[in-house]
Length: 227
Image 1 (tube, rainbow, N blue to C red):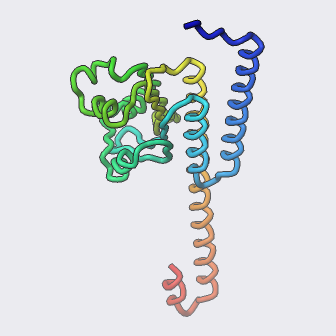
Image 2: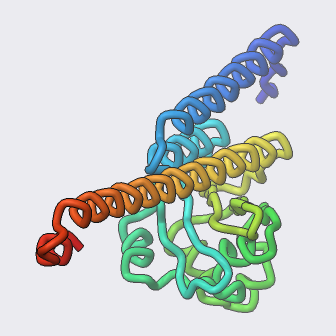
Image 3: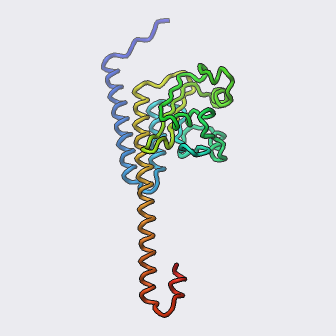
């Protein structure tokens, strides 16, 4: 049987340009969402997960939240992950122990972890439960774990899974690392917005109490009621 001909140079160039435009559009979309999503980073997380899965050809993807000192991880967004896997997060069964969770190890060490083939790992060969389960229960083969790194350390992780042995390229890893940086910006913006809201609410409450105090000189009851 004759081998298929390699793509013509102009076809390869067109494919590369198409991919570059798709990545640029994804980055622009996420930046727009960051500017719009003040107190809620969820829309940004959803866009990051779906665009990462699409542009990297991953069958499943997720974004989990967790940091040093936490007992478990929380799933903030997911795509293509089996319901039983999501249920484990909801029940608080996904540990932040780096010896148990690869995502936790990426978060706590602040390093991207790329596993070209789950079967070709010491964990799988030694029968470590979560390695064996990843292969046999979810069909995971090539996996990528990119931490969300804030000033205070890792705060979460983007996970990508392929059900065939197809390692992630350096360009794909770099793209997901960019997405991770944008997710961190969304988290920090939401945190700052909520802090501002809390401060404004406190200042408004203090103004209301001071106003009632100035009007209730002979009766403390209205002040106590408002407090």
